[in-house]
Length: 166
Image (cartoon, rainbow, N blue to C red; front, side, top):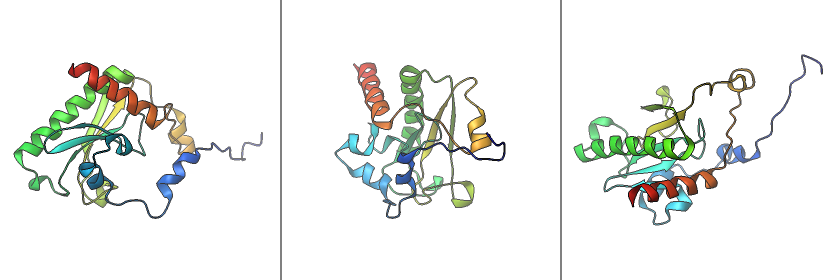
């Protein structure tokens, strides 16, 4: 193989991310839905919910989200703040049990310049990590490898949630 020739990895499911007409209020829709599976909502609280990221940084990437569409931490009620962090803890428990996560990146991207993909509805990212999970693909090929489909992982997370609450 010519060292100057590029290789290609195909991930056709990613086209959904780039399609025009994506729902900009998908978090608000998820907050209001009664069909949690269709929106990948893993858990609900009175003021917040836990949802899978459809375009994850890593397999199991979850987000804790207030039901209200707000974009500033100062606008959160005390109940919302508490529930967001409780859901972050719950997410870690689910991910440790379900996919054996060893560590986590947890954080907020507030504002477009900070990397927020959804600027007007804040959400707390919970990204599972594993020892040695960094590899050459993101560095050399700008590609992430996600070994499990969203629907399959959703079913496992919900089963773990249900097992832990009984």
